[in-house]
Amino acid sequence: MSDTPVRPGRPSVRRLPQLPPAVRGLSPASALRLSPPSDTWFKPALSVVVASAVPHLALLAVGRLDLVVYSMAGSLCALYGHGLPYARRARALAGVVLGMVAGLAVSLVTASLTGSTAVLVAVGALLAAVQKVLCDATRIGPPAHVIFTFVSSAALFAPQRLDQIPGHLALTLGAGAFAWLVALAPALVRREGPERRAVARALEAAAVCAADPGPRSGNAADPGPRNGSAADPGPRNRRAAAAAVHAAWRCLLASGRPTPVRRSLERLVVQAEAAFVAPGPGAGAADPDRLRAWAALTRGRGPVPTPASAPGTADELYGIDAERTALRAREARRTSRRALLRRIGPGSPLLPVAVRTLFGCALAGYLCAALGVGRPYWAIVTAASLCQANLTLSWNRALQRTLGNLLGVLVFAAVLPVSRISPLALVCCCLFFGFAAEALITRNYWLGSVAVTPMALLVLEFGGTHPAGELIGDRVLDTVLGAAAGFLAATLVTNRRAAGRVERALAATDRARAAAERTGADPADRDRARRTLTASLVELREAGDTAAGEWWQRALPEQRLLAAERAGHRTLAATAPRRGPTAHAPSIGAE
Image (cartoon, rainbow, N blue to C red; front, top):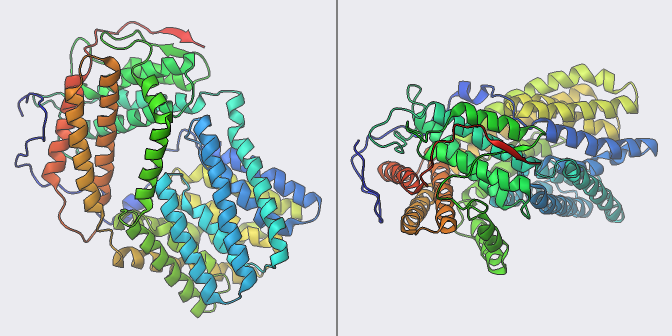
C-alpha cells in the first residue's frame, strides 16, 4: 500500500477483505488457557488479607465470629482501585465502601421485612443488575460487580431483625474504612507507585512494538489487518502499545499535582508513544533494549530515568498540565457527570447487559428455589458473574466459573476437617483462600474460582457447622443452574446496541483525527490532540471487539473500522514531533 498524504476529513474507504472478528468463537481451549500472572497480583492479595485479618481476629477475640459476614463486606473493598493513582484511589474506594454499605442496607431491610423467597430473589436480581450497570459505567474493577452481588445476595437470605441493622451496617462501614486505609497505606512509602507501574507497562509494550513492528507496506503507521496473525504480530503489538500509552496518560492525568518523578514519567511516556506511532527503521528509531531498560528502572524503587528532551516538544509540560487543569475545572466535572449519566441512561449500550443480568439472576434464583435449594443466592451470584459484554465472553465465563466451582468444592471437602479444629483455624483457612484467590485469578478466572469457592463455603461455618454433603450438593447444583440460566440470558437478551457503539466510536475517531491534523505548532495543543486521538482509537478497538463477540446484530462496518484505524495511526505518525537519535543512556535525575 502506498503512502497517502494526511488530510482532514473522513478516511477514504477501499475494498478491504472481510476478516473474522477479534472475539468471535466459543472455544473451550481459549477460555481455559492460563495467562501470565499480573505484575501486581500480590497487591490486592496482600491488601485483602490485611484488611480481613484485623476485623476477623477482633471478632474472634470477643467471641462473635457470627458477625464475620458483615465485617467481610467492608474488608472486600480492599480489592478495588489498585491500578489507580492514590489521589483517585482515595475517592474511588470511598465510593466503593459507600456502595457496599448501600447495597447491604437494602438487602438487610428487605430480609427483615419479608421471608418470601420470590421477593428476595427479585430484589437480589434487581440489585445485581443495578450493581452491574454502575460498575461498568464507572469502570471500577476488577472485580467489578461480582463482590457487591455476593455480599448483597448473601445478606438477603440471612435471618435479620430491624433493630440489628444499624449495628451490622456500622460493622461493615468500620471494616470498609480500615480497608480504605490499607489500600492507601503504600502511598506513605511510594506515592507515585501506580504511575510508575503504568508507565513501565507502556515502555514494555512500546519495546515489543519496536522490536517487531510487522512488515512495512510503504507506510510505517499502517496497522495492517484488523486482527493481525501469528505470522504478523505487528498490528497487534501496535494496538497493545497504544492502549498501554493511553492508560499511562490517564494515570498521570489523575495523579494530582506535578512532582519531579511525574515530570520524568511524562517524558518517558512521550518516548513510548514515539516507539509505537512510527516504529519503522530510521535514524530516530526506538531502541527496544533501551525501552526495556527504562521500564525496569521505572518499575523498581530507585530513581526514575530521565530521557533527553526531544526536539520540538515542550520540555517540561508536554501539554499535560493544561489538560490536568482543564479536567479539574467545574465545567469539566459537570461534563464528566453528564457523560456518566448518559452511560447509565435509557439509551446506554449498557442497558442490554443490565437486562441480561436481571433476567439471568432471577431465573437462576427461581429455579433453585423451585428445586428446594436453601441458598439460591449462590446461583444468583453465578448468573451475575456470567453476564458479560457479549456472548463470547459470557460463554468463556460460564466454562471458567463451572470448572472452578466444581474443583473448588473438592478443595473444600479436603480442608473442612482442618477448619473445624478451632475457630482460629477457620479464620486462618479463610485468610489463606482469600490470598490464593487473588494470587490465582489473574492467571485465569477458573483458577481463582478454585480458591474462591472453599472460602465462600467456609464463611458459612462462622455461623455454625453445617453438613458437608449438604453444602457441597447445594453448591454444585447452584453452580450448574446459575451457569445455565446466565448463559441462557446472554443468548436470549442480545446486545444489539454494540454495533451502535461502533458507529459512535467511528465518528469520534474521525473528529479526533481531523482535530489532530488541524493543530498548529503549539506543542501543548498538538500533544493534547494526539492523546485524544489515541484514546479514540483505543475505544474504537474495544467497541469493535465487543460487537464482534455478539451473535445476533446488524453487520459490522468492518471496512470503515479498518480504514478509520489505519488513518488514525497514519495521523499519529504524521503529527509526531521529529525526534533525533536518542541512543545515549538517559540521565538519572528524578529522585
